[in-house]
Length: 210
Image 1 (cartoon, rainbow, N blue to C red):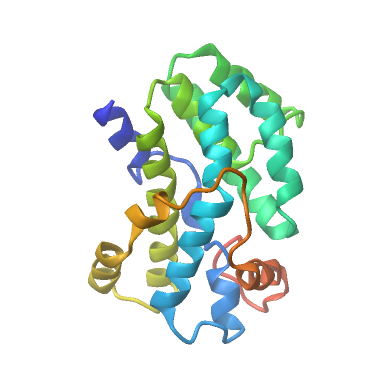
Image 2: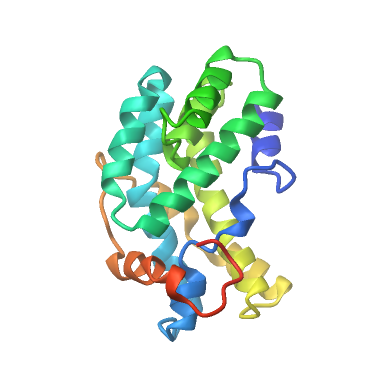
């Protein structure tokens, strides 16, 4: 399972996350990031509270993916966040359907391709990891690590951090503490981040899709 975890966490696994900035590009363009480390801290705590409950629930009962997926569709208020979550979740499903054996993944991929499943990233991550046998703790670590890596990569490509500075910042993030905070039900901890991200489509120039 350690090798499976490393495979899914590897940037070579084509899950589509690197074309998204999780709202960071819009927040920077709007001048709303006076303290980048603090902004990343808030964004990742938000991921733990708003996304990881969906990951956990889908991991526990992958057969309920469609129901949990609909719950996340209702939870995400921003059209940009919904679009990005669907795109990344469907990319993960497509890659997992080619890489792994469980027939459920191929079925979910077909349902998402046909538009019968939104395929949001958090529940898809939980369900895929559940059926390939990755334990819950490692699945939550994977989801939060992926969120951190995507944000830091976006900050580097937007010219706000150097690669080594990003690694130092990554090492100092309290990701284990965020994991200990995962609530029973999803909750919004950084509403301004969602509002900034919702304005992404209105930017004059854009490097990322969200």
